[in-house]
Image (cartoon, rainbow, N blue to C red; front, side, top):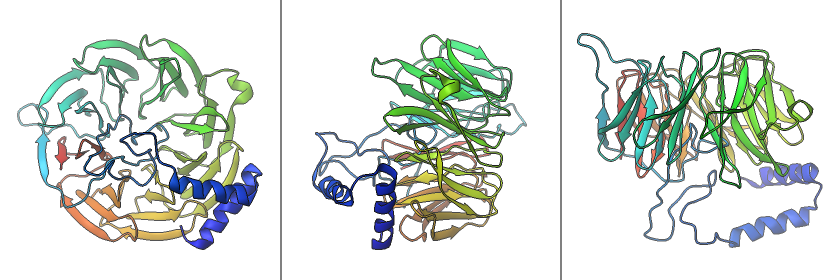
Length: 417
């Protein structure tokens, strides 16, 4: 961040939190010298790197964008050039094409979890590319799952939400909503160790399930379909669930569902929101279908900035400590200053970019509808490398254990190292 933006950011923090500039400067300087307490993984959202010298970071990618705030930042550093390690092709009937894969993969414990439009949900060994197990859902699966060491959760186009044993694929529970599910799952584990499952449906409801029993802990009705994966927000000393809907609103709800009608907030977006908000430092960044990108202070429930791009966004943004990265059907991946909204650089592909970008070290990984996987320089937007899959890429990459996994419209899962 340059000197001008640093001053703007400090001014915004001072006005937002009503503290002195001296204190802010002290905390900033202190952060440069204080290190973590022996942890080997970098905090999500910071500039990823290695751990102690000679020690490689090994991390899971358990959610659609890697973490509950949907930041799209990998803890591990994956640098180009990459080599294709393996491909996995599900079984297909003779003479028929493989069903496309639009769902983004997630990775936990060295296993890749992803669903297909053929209704198969797959568990694939990350190291070898061999199938561990598969589960037949009632309908097509187009949305990303969420996984823990014990279980994996996902929804299908017939409106079912599933919980499966991560190790065996055995069904734990299922719940039938009254509309198809096109958005992914988010998870929240509280201090007691209890995990809640959050997912939206075309029946207008956002659901919170008990992860072990499938019991509906609470649900919240909006005025239209919910197709986005909800984000979690840590702000103002509390945790919220944040998501955009087809009703043109950004909904902010208490994650525990308590007194939801009294504590909910609805921020006017003005258009259909088909993707997830990227959240950092209490700011939710939304790119919507009517060609705007908006930064919203979740705690204050107020708009920080809004820019008009005239691009109908499907992909979810990614955000790091200084920049917001947004890709769209205008073929551009654009970096914006996350404090001011000012454009910093843009990368131009040959076709639409419907896949959400992933940040890993100094590289932005981006899939394209031109069938290419791009590595883009995080600093200036220049192209570092590309690989042609030969199939459109709508699913977003996942990064774990030294590998990058991405899926194509040809129904194939690709792993690179």
